[in-house]
Length: 308
Length: 283
Image 1 (tube, one colour):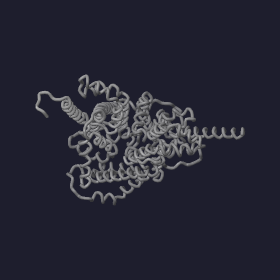
Image 2 (image 1 turned 120 degrees about the vertical axis):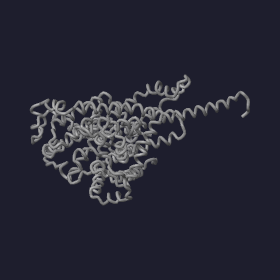
Image 3 (image 1 turned 90 degrees about the vertical axis):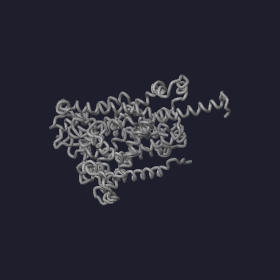
Image 4 (image 1 turned 135 degrees about the vertical axis):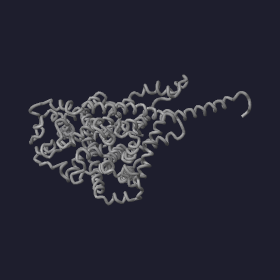
């Protein structure tokens, strides 16, 4: 640069430009500062701590004592833990597909333009998701009562003697599946939004080729909904892992551990038995398994690949 | 030909009728629990437990609602809940809009990579952080106060950051540039130019924050120890776990807890639905 008093236009623009960029970067940093602090304090620190605790024997009053992999080994020998894994797996393998199918079917039907007067139904299906969890639980305890609950009464109208639902080890999980279906409103709304993105011209083209409603749905709408379905399934699976309030309030894990779900047992280990290290190990196992399942789901739904 | 046409039309009519019937039955199934909640709350104790089940109370009574407001410290629980909810909504609105602005309207090196980290935290299960957070709060004596429930909302929430960022990115840069030409600093642009036109997404964030806080159960369960701090959700579950729960009162309490949410929903339906769909149709 020449040592003249005046700077050329280009040089001036460069200096101003980089000054502006630096100022923008500084501002950017300041604006997201709350997130940075929160991330460090409420996310990073706890993650590292819980990883450390998972290798320790830690009941709140004492200091953590390193015991290596004992927590993890003991977990897999723990019958309650195994039961909790099986129960949660049941909900993932049975509950999630049932809920997804219901939401998908209903949303496709609601989206069918030739079916008039169904707009209000969207609201009806969505309302259960707004109810406070505790109220929903109380409600379903009531509805599922073996003797005079609504469900069994309706079943008796068609001549079936309803099962014990929440009081029966075999029917307690199906009871929860029913409740899951009742709260499918979120998934339903998302499917509806995704369906509305499918252009009518595709349906019309298929109609010309002679495809009726069912053919159209199965071969056009569903493939196009693949990312939406993936999102909903992933969300539902994560939701099942984190399911806590419902089993805690409704059954406390019974009868006979038939509704002991993963998060409930974790809570008990941490806050009832004060085995913090044990519970932390449980949390980390859950994290790894959940990540693995999500990766598998992404592969299954071939996310990111375009079909011809 | 004409006969075939008539048969075809009949088939179409039947099929559509069937679909409508199925949908209608589903609606019934979804609404029945609410109907039941409502009628049950007006029943007397003896009527609630009669076998066989009775659809309508023979004697409609307001006694249960009386009990809600007199037999339990309802207003205390309500006040606690509202305190938490209002501060959480406020914290959510302020922090998330600032943070999303930083990701959406400003350019800085590494911005998009950091945003990916924000999104990644959305799938982090709470169990992994809950225990250390609880232990940390115990050490600084925040347990058995409202602080663990309120303070985190002032530091952003990945989901809301994502939602607001998507919205803010769509605002034309001309607005920001005109503000810069007028000599405003970034914060002034944020507050006086961008925020006023962000009302739709701000409303959605407010509603979703409200819902999360109002319905929260695990948070109060873990962090609130004494009864005078209980929220409505926590109080309801405590009442239920007593040896001989007063079901009529619980049902009436349930109605009272659901009503504000329903009213809010019917007034602001658009924003509820928008919030959900914005999350599902992400980039």
